[in-house]
Length: 271
Image 1 (cartoon, rainbow, N blue to C red):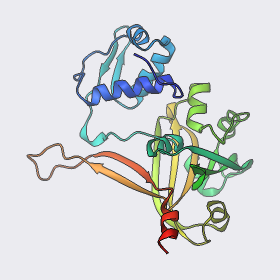
Image 2: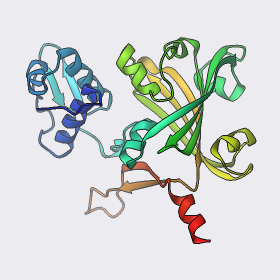
Image 3: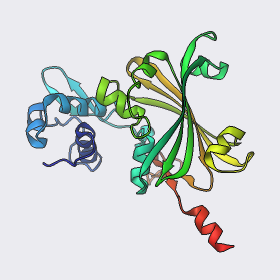
């Protein structure tokens, strides 16, 4: 099976297998093809296949038995089907070209509210990375990201205007971001962020705070993203699975941002 160019091969393999599992091509406890078979199918190394399977294992789609292989895991309704994505993936899904402008990348004393999220001492040093996030060269969001020095050092020498933290850590260092805690609020935009986003100070913006972890619950970064509220909204999809029980919960099936880079232009044309 031929893979697309421009996307990590292990991601494409995990996407393919995930879809096969979600659409019922494999039953619970059914064995997946071996690493060797998958390598032959996709014409990739066993290392690439192993990374794809590790992703599915971390997402609770499969379980692995040493010497036997990988098997489909029973998925409970409350787990949902939402996956972690980065800005570039969100932009690609929206049909927009993602890019960034780095405005700050320096060490600093950890702010109090960041220390608790990264499990750092109050006198610890972290590295702060600020980036203006663009879709088709239009300001969409502004990220302020704090990282422990070790993870920040891995980003040095990389093109942070076009590469994402996810991809750098996963592709170059085999450090996958496997879990994230999100908090979504609204606030009046700080003056310095407003200037970067091209909006008036005090304008209401959507704020997403995210703490991301790697294996062993190691904190990789805490990020505060300010979204222009005129260009993004979040949509969710619920799916009721037990139609006979009117009191059954509706697990979250999809939750994703919807971008509109032309909203301001249409608004200007309407006046």
